[in-house]
Length: 227
Image 1: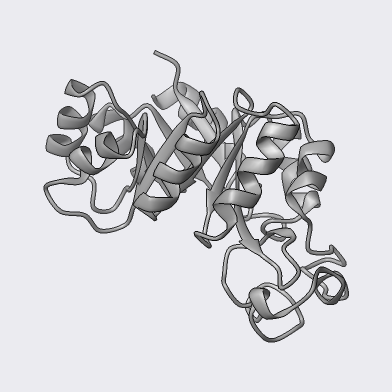
Image 2: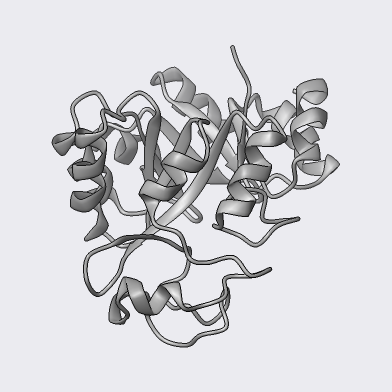
């Protein structure tokens, strides 16, 4: 079984998160896949940003959904980087991508891009929102999907199965062997997030995870050795 190391928002531990600079660095570091987050701008652009507001990661203020793409372009996203749209990331790197739907409304816009550019094999789609996972699976035939959870009940594996997800991405600090074994018995993969330390890597190995999302490129090298 192949152990996957996924660059979290690129390599946000060393570069400004969710920027082209961060994604290019993740690819150069040899990450197996690159994770990014999607919201819709006021005028419907598929914007790459984690938070619903721009305050934390740019020099601006306000909600992504209340700004046009032109307004978002004026912001500094760190080190002089601009807020990218999804299509720009597709063109900037050739790596497999894991696109997380933060705003449920972004599912349809993402589906349109995936269908137009035939991305079902390159782009895996993830979300905390069960309905977003179910919607993208319906809109894009053959797409691989991931259900994410930070806190979960005993039904998390059933939830993943219900929306057709092939993978669960779960908070490493709360993950138990019981959940991993249950998921594996049902044919689901399990990815731990966010794996940034040697202790986390030891836990990854003990739990028998299929992959890890990390902020730091060096975790890939250590993960290859550990897991």
